[in-house]
Amino acid sequence: MQQGKLIIFSAPSGSGKTTIVKYLLQKDLNLAFSISATSRPARGQERHGVDYYFLSQEAFAQKVSENAFLEWEEVYPGTCYGTLKKEVERLLQEGKNVVFDVDVVGGVNIKKFYGDRALAVFIKAPSVEELRKRLELRATDAPEVIEKRVAKATLELTYAPEFDVVVVNDQLERACIETEKVVHNFVTDKN
Image (cartoon, rainbow, N blue to C red):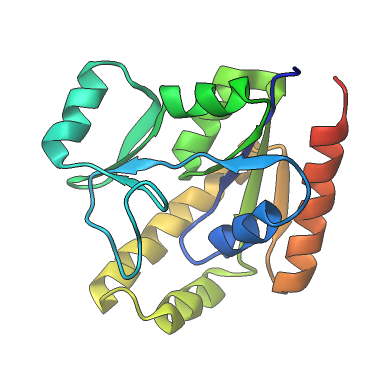
């Protein structure tokens, strides 16, 4: 059985990355989602083992000390996210193409680790103003959290050139179709 490939999605919060990833997971591309671990509590309807592996800060720190993460980062003070090596290897051994929904630093690190076996896709909103609007419409964060996310987005946009492909999500349906074509070409390439 041929080992799978890796497709990394990164974007500033509110760019539509998670919506695009969910769209792709419904397509016939042999994709499996790499569930990230986080030290933050669940939001809304999020479930452990489905959306994230929710770990206490102590448990997350223990995994770090065990070198259990492919990559991890303290994205906000006291809030860490990481990709468990065991999870990725399990999916690759099953011949699946592993999809990552990670922050930009994590995306760059996974790409460096796997090289040509990985495709790094950066999703961005047409502007920072549009990003702010989307975050406000989401209504999941307090105004001060939205301000933090917008400030972080400005920094994250500087990482876009380190990715293989940049998709501007100015119209969701078009962005989904464009991303699907890019991913399809990558996973069907025999190299």
